[in-house]
Structures are given as structure tokens and as C-alpha cells.
Image 1 (cartoon, rainbow, N blue to C red):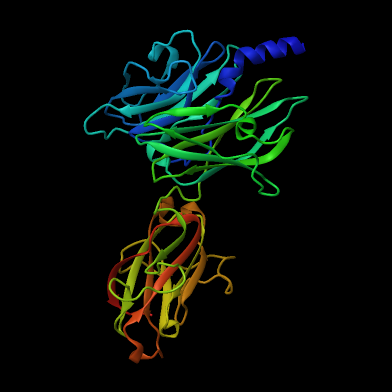
Image 2: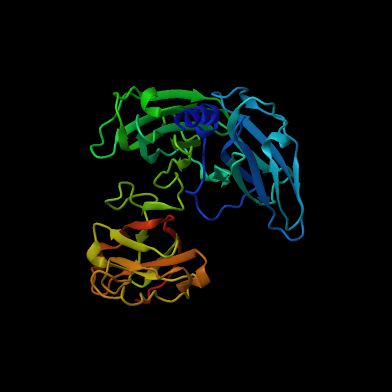
Length: 421
């Protein structure tokens, strides 16, 4: 039995070392350009790609671009035929047929894009790689904008040498720009780096694979558990397609762990967002600083909040005693009502939506459908002069600092209005 297992491992090893499933992504997954981070066709595994056209009126013709990895048998862009999706249709194709692949082992990344000009037709994509026995894994299609140059990490890597043998392998790819990268692995309990840095440069749309990341990094011999990998763009903001896989030897199961960052360098989802406060601690001053200039006028700011979320925002200013702020819910910029937290999140402290004589708020938004019929949109922050404040301090410089679990956008200044609180 062990001999059979070993033979099957040798036959299937190339594919299983590139296994991937994009389960760690936003559910907002449609796009005009979709990336499947891992695609492969080998002697053991076939690759089926499923596609859906959500339009009920317009068909879509897709360019199919398979970029074989530098660590594979035939690196570079393959010639693949276009694929047409009729309106309101869900269809699939086999990678080996669509890209006329030979019997060699191939792995890389697959990019699908609307072929029209302009590219305005969105679609969904999903990949399934499996053996004739049905053992396999899935690869979700990621809208290309999901990938960024932010430092990102993968959790839970392991390696064992006996019993059910585990091996961890890591991959890094570039999209339309040159990518300079560094990969490091760290012990999860002590945060001690294992081995040395792995560095490299990839040209646009290149990808490479590192089999047994522990060996490549030069980690000391032995078994490992609870290790995390960190991927860093060492030059600029070019996007990285980074992930690792963990495979086992008995059944050849393998999983995919996308490298995840804090906010993907996306100003719409910063977990800490500061406005008119460059250091996120004090208010900016001088040209461009936001100010309260009158005792009878408030400033209105807007930001996107993704419910359900806990959100905390505070003013910073050298004149906090002269200021107050409150949170209003979605609606008209001038008429949207004050946000009223629901029980049990309406107790004060710690929960408050701000208001008279308060310079901050901390709220739970309610669950998805509690606000704006479940649609994420603008909320409003009002900042005004506090009754009883010292008008001699005008104009009042201030900044806004917000913390959130899901990320919020910049609380931009939107308008001024008569102070009503």
C-alpha cells in the first residue's frame, strides 16, 4: 500500500504542489478582468473553468490568457482561443482544450477578460482541478483589482517528515508590472524568522513556485507547525499574486491560502483612517487644514461604512473643548437623520453616536439589512462649535481619526450648513 501511495505521489506531485482555491476573497466577485491565481493541466489533473454571464441581454466574448509559470515546463503566454458566454448563461471549458496544451505538466495563472472595447461586461469565474477519481480543489476567480502591492501573509504552514507527510509550497506572481519581492517565514509562537529571505524579480505576468518553502528558505531541519509566510513588495506598489499551499501525502489533498493584507492599499477600506491629521494624532494646521470658522455653522463629512461593523471616530484638535461631533446615517447630505444605535449597543458608555459636547462616537451599525436595505453607502459626520465654547479661539483646526473592523473610507469634507446641535 505504501508503495502505491508513493507512486501516486510521484505522479501527482507537480500538480498538487500548485493546488489553489481562492476562498479568501470578497463576495463581490464580478469583474471585466478576472484572475484565477492557479491553473494547471498535468498527467494527473485536469482543469475545468466555469463561467457565468449575469447579463440577461448581452453576450460576452472573453480573452483567455494562460501565463505559464517560470517554474513550469513551457513558461510564458500560451495561445488560447476566445470563449463566448451567451446572455444569462453559465458554461465551462477545459483548460487543456481551450489552450491546446500538450501532454507536459503545465501550471501558472489564468486571466480572463472581456474582449470588447470598452470593457464593460462583467462576469464570474471559478476553476476546478481534479483527478479522474474526483480528488481535487477549487480556484475562485478574483477581480484583478483585488490584488495589491501591500505586504501580505499566509498562516498555518507546516512540514512533517513521517506519518501523513505535509509539505508547504509558496507562489508569487506579477500582473502588468515588474515585481520585486521578498518572502520570509516565521515561527507562529515566537515570531522568529526561520532561515533567510527569499528574494526575486518577476517581469509582467510572470509567476514562480517555491517547493517546500522551508527548504528554500534554509530553515533548520525538522518538523514545523503554525508557521506564517510574509510576502513583501520591496520596490513600489505593483500588485502581487501571492499564496501558499499545504499538501498531505496519504490522499494528496491540498489547500490554498491566499496572502492577505490589512487593507490592500485601498483607501476605501482602511482600518485606521485619518483626515486632516497627517500623523493620526494631532490636527493639521495652515493651508488645507479643515476648520470650524463660525459658531453658527457646522461642517459635514462623509465616509463609507460597511455594515455590520464597530466604528470609532474621534476629533483631534488643540481646541477640543470648543468642538462637538455626531454621526448621521445614510440619506441626504443635509437631511439624513442622526444615527440611533439599537439595543444592546445603545448603552453609554461605551456606545454613543456623539452629539452635544461630545468629540467622538463609538457605534455598532446593526447587521446588514438594518441600514439602507443592506447596501453600503455614505454616512455623515457633523462637526460643529460647542455651545459654551470660547469663540475667541476661532478658527478651530481639527482632524478626524476613525477605527473600524471592516475598513472605512476617508471622511472627506462635503459641505457646510447651519449648526443644528
